[in-house]
Image 1 (cartoon, rainbow, N blue to C red):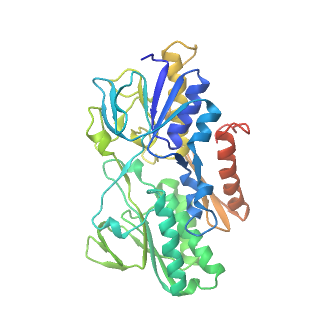
Image 2 (cartoon, rainbow, N blue to C red; image 1 turned 90 degrees about the vertical axis):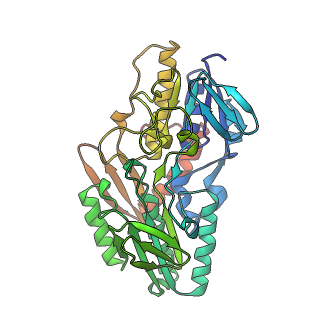
Image 3 (cartoon, rainbow, N blue to C red; image 1 turned 135 degrees about the vertical axis):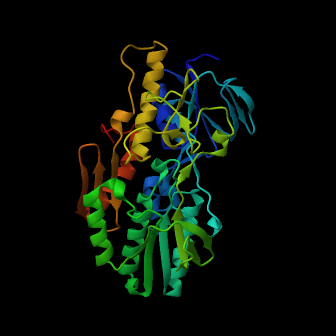
Length: 391
């Protein structure tokens, strides 16, 4: 196999970006994905509250592949062998992979009773199940709602709390519009004493003010012991009753990666250097949630970082193979936290880097900006509109 042929594993945000940019660098690209569509997780928060449909959030990989002229293979990767530079597919069998990009994402930390929860960051189908549960709870007319997220002490960068807060705020907005918000007890829970601390001190203060103003309850600083059908049990055996539990487990290494001979950190994420090159395996790269990130303590795995890593991998591959001249690009220089935290009737612009931490309230317009971003994401991926630098 020629090194100019690259195989990309994973049809998510990182994998799709890699496929597009490797094509721009002149590579022959094959993208292997278990799903036939790209699920745009940042805007999936609107499916459960019925301000977006599943089809609005899923985007055909066939269309993207045709637009950018890369090969799409729908199959499941069952094993990876770095020493032999092979991958094994469920349907396609053993394949040589001289030049490989791993963008398969992360698994989730397993909690006892997790089947009693639903996640907005889990399997795409769970967003529809959440919608059904919310509809049933609204039909009931009252109830207790508990949203939360967990941690991973082996790699805190895999914590993903933002979408949990966004859906929490959007559900509050929906119930308020229906005039029934006071019929529901809404509680947010997390094992950290200050969830959201990585956003910065100002953001924490604004969040605390928002929680108090909207009569949200908190259950922070207690590890989760287990989930039950209508409750969460914490390490001190205290109980939080819930008719609807939305929980985002922290990211953890996939069994596919843990069972491989790739170098991994304590959580099972692939060790890479600053150029996204996998340690000890020439011409193999790892990007996005599957990779072990290095950087400041507040670092977080986000879609825009995954895209930076994807573009850098393509660029660095071209440099390594002398398809073009220049310097390799690093991902750590681009680590920051960036999101538009939607609330249904507005949003908060969140940004953090080594020099500053911001949370800027943006009533009304912030919500429409996030809707606009969803449209922009699809159109720019298809090359119908120019890409805005940094977005």
